[in-house]
Length: 296
View 1 (tube, rainbow, N blue to C red):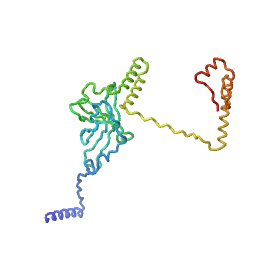
View 2: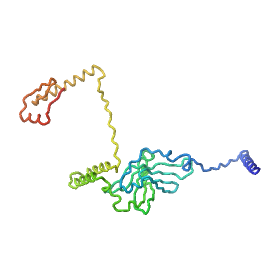
View 3: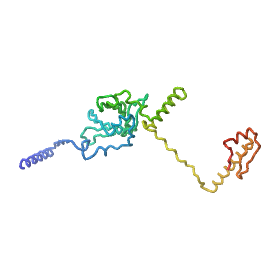
View 4: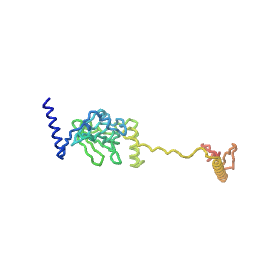
C-alpha cells in the first residue's frame, strides 16, 4: 500500500511541477470503445436500411446462400456480403467515429443474353446526392468466399464472390429458372422477333417485363396520379347558372350538327328525331353498336 501511495504522490508532484513551471502536460490518448469494438452498441442499431431486401430469386441452387455472410478485410476496412440481404462496410479502427455503413441492399439480378451476370445491391447509405450501390459478380471457385472489393466509380462498388455453385456451364442460365408459362411466353416473344414482327427495342422491353413478372428484376415504381383539383360542386348560384347555360348551348350545337348530317338522335323526352337518313347511313349508324346520341 505504501508503494502505491508513494507512486501516486510522485505523479501528482510531477504534474504540479509541470504546471507551475509553465510546461505543457502530455496527454496520452488511449483506445476508446465507441467505435466498431463497442460491445454496448449493436451493429444492427447503427445500420439503418432505407428499404427491405427483395425476395430470394434466381437459380434455386443459389438459394442455399441466403442467411449466410462472408467477410473480406482490406486495409482498415472489413466488408461483409450477405447474399440476398445486403453488403456492409466496417472500419477496423478504435476511433470514436469509426465508420460502419450499408453499401447496398439486395434488389435484383443483372441479366444479359439469357445469363445471370450479377447481383445488384442498391439503396445503400447516402453518398452526396445519390445512394451507394454494389454489383456482385459470381465466379467459379473451389469454395464460397468474398474474393475482392473495388470501387470503379464513386460510391459504386464491385464485389467478386467465388463459389463452386456457379462452376457448371448452365448454372447461371435464366430460361430454366422460369415457369412453363413464362418459358412459353418467352418463346413467343423470340419467335415474333425472328419474324420481324417486333423491333429489337420492343423485344427487350417485353423481355424486361417478363423478368419483372418472374421476380428477377425489381418493378419500377409507377408515379402516383395527380389528384384532380376540379371541384364537383358549385361555389355559388351564379356559377351554377353559367355552367348550365354553357351546357345547354353545347347541346344545341350538337343537335344542330346532327340535324345537318341527317342523323337521328333521342331528345330528353325520349322522342327520336328522325331526319330520314339513307338506308346505307342508317345501317352504319344503327348497327351492332346501337348508336344513340344521348344529349341530356
